[in-house]
Image 1 (cartoon, helix red, strand yellow):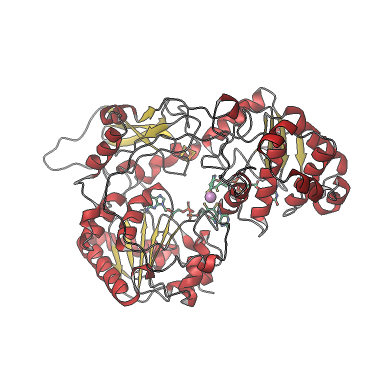
Image 2 (cartoon, protein in one colour):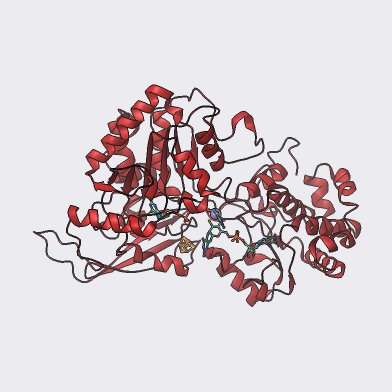
Length: 574
Ligand SMILES: Nc1nc2c(c(=O)[nH]1)N[C@H]1C(S)=C(S)[C@@H](COP(=O)(O)OP(=O)(O)OC[C@H]3O[C@@H](n4cnc5c(=O)[nH]c(N)nc54)[C@H](O)[C@@H]3O)O[C@H]1N2
Ligand SMILES: Nc1nc2c(c(=O)[nH]1)N[C@H]1C(S)=C(S)[C@@H](COP(=O)(O)OP(=O)(O)OC[C@H]3O[C@@H](n4cnc5c(=O)[nH]c(N)nc54)[C@H](O)[C@@H]3O)O[C@H]1N2
Ligand code: SF4
Ligand SMILES: [Mo]
C-alpha cells in the first residue's frame, strides 16, 4: 500500500517557502514600508467557512492582528453565537503549516519535490495543459472535485471552458442518498440547512443524527431550547451519543437495520390508525398499496433484526403520533453509510408523511430564499458528451453528481478518458473511500491541480498546488442559503493574506483570462461583481458591508400559513 506522508510534504513546502519569502513565523503583522502599523480595534462583519452552515459573524482586529470572531446577532442562522469550530476559525490565519506560494512538482507524482513559482507561471502552466487536454480529448476530459461555496467561480470558469464533469462530496459521500429518498417521496430534498423545525417541535426523532456533535449551529441552539422546555426526544443510534443522553427514549439499534425499525413504526401507526388521515387524503398517493406493503412488518418481526423490543417500538410509535404534526422526524445529513441509504431515507420521509409533518409547524418547513440576480455572462458552451460520473444514467434517482463515478471514469477511461483533475477544498485521500483507487486514477492524469489552504494529503499528489487565502482574508460569492427567513450575507476580508495566497475569485478569473475566456468575467474586481448583484436585488451594498446580513420580507414556511403545497413527483402528490 502506498502511504501518504503529510509530514514530509510539510517539510518540503516549508523549505521551499524559506527560499521564496522570508517568513517570520506565527505572529507576523503585515506592514507595508510606507504605512504605520495599525493600532486600535476594528470589527468586520463576514460569514464563517469552517463548515457549510455559513453562519454570519463579526470579526475583530486589534492592533492590526486578527483577534476573534463572534456571531452576528442579525443572522437568523447563528443568532449571534458561533459554534466552537467557528470561533476557532481565526487560527487558520496564523497557522504555521499553511500553504504560502504556488508550488510546482519537479518530480514524479507521489514523490514530494516542489519548487515555488509565481502565480503567472502557475496559471500559465495550468492553462497550457488545459488547452492541450481540450485539443486532444475535448474539454469534458477535464474533471473537477469542488466542495463548498468558495468553488463557485471555479465552476464558472470550468463551464465556460466546456466541461460538465464537476462533482462534489455532497452526492456519493454525504447527503446524496438522503436527498434521493426525500425527492422521490416529496419531489424536493431535505434542504441545506435542513428544513427541521426543532424550535417548534414537541417530539424530536433523531435517527442517526448526533445533534451537538455534528455542531450544526442553528440546530444545536434549537435542540438545547427544545430539551429545556421538555420536548420528547427519541434517539435511535447504536452509539450512546450526546443527543441520546438527553432522550426520553433511547433505542440502541444494531447498525444498518434502521429500515426494519422504520417499517415496524409505520406498521404500528397504520394498524392503530394513528396517522393523519386528512393530510394523507389531501396530499398522499398510493396509500392503499402502502398499507399493504407495511402489513407484514410487525414489531415482533423487527425485534431480531434491530434488537429493539416490540414494546419499545410500539411505545415510541405512539409517542410520535401523540404530538403530530409537531413531531419532527429529523432528516439527518450524512447518509452515505451502508448501501441501502436512499431507501432508509425514503422510509424516514414516508414516516414524516404518515404523521402529516412535512410543511407543518414543528415538523419540516418549506424553505425560503433571498432571490439575488446573477451577474450576466455569455452562455456556457454545450458539452458534447454526457457527464462521465453517471454514464447511461446508472443511478437514475440521484439528485447530485457522483464523485466516485468521476474517479471510476478516470481509472477505466470509460465512457471516455478523463485527463485532468482540479480539486478545490476537498481532501479526497481521506474523504473518498479507497485511497488506492484515488491514486490509480491520479496516475492516468495529464494535469492534476489542487487548490487548498493547507498541505492536505491530496495536495501531496498534485502537479500544481494553489494556495488560497483563508475565508477571513477574502471576499466570496454571496450567501443566500435556504432558510425559514430569506436573507443575504456578505463575506469580506478582515485581514490581508500573510504571503502569496490568493482568493478563489481572483484565481478563477485569472485562469479564465489565460484560457481566452475573459468575456465570462466582465467585471474588474469582486466588489464590482458583488455590488451589481446586491443592487440588482434592490438592496444596498453599503448596508450589507456595514451589517453583514440583510433580511428579506418573511414568506410563509408552513402549509397552514399559505406556503405552497407543491410536490414535483410524477403523481404531483406525496
Ligand atoms: N465536529 C464535526 N462536525 C461536523 C463535521 C465534522 O467533520 N466534524 N462534518 C459535517 C458534515 S460534512 C456532515 S454531513 C455532518 C454529519 O453529521 P450527521 O449527519 O449527524 O452524520 P454522521 O456523523 O455520519 O452520523 C450520525 C450518527 O449516526 C450514528 N449511526 C451510525 N450507524 C447508524 C445506524 O445504522 N443507525 C442509526 N440510527 N444511527 C447510526 C452514529 O453513531 C452517529 O452518532 O456533520 C457536519 N458537522
Ligand atoms: N470515512 C469517512 N469518510 C467520509 C465521511 C465519514 O464520516 N467517514 N464523511 C463524508 C462527508 S459527510 C463529507 S461532506 C466529506 C467531506 O470531505 P472533504 O470534502 O474532504 O472535507 P474536509 O475533510 O472538510 O476537507 C476540506 C479540505 O478543504 C481545505 N480547505 C478548508 N478551507 C478552505 C478554503 O477556504 N479554501 C480552500 N481552497 N481549501 C480549504 C482543507 O484544508 C481540507 O483539505 O467526507 C465524506 N467522507
Ligand atoms: S456551524 Fe460552526 S463551523 Fe459551521 S458555519 Fe456555523 S459557526 Fe462556522
Ligand atoms: Mo457532509
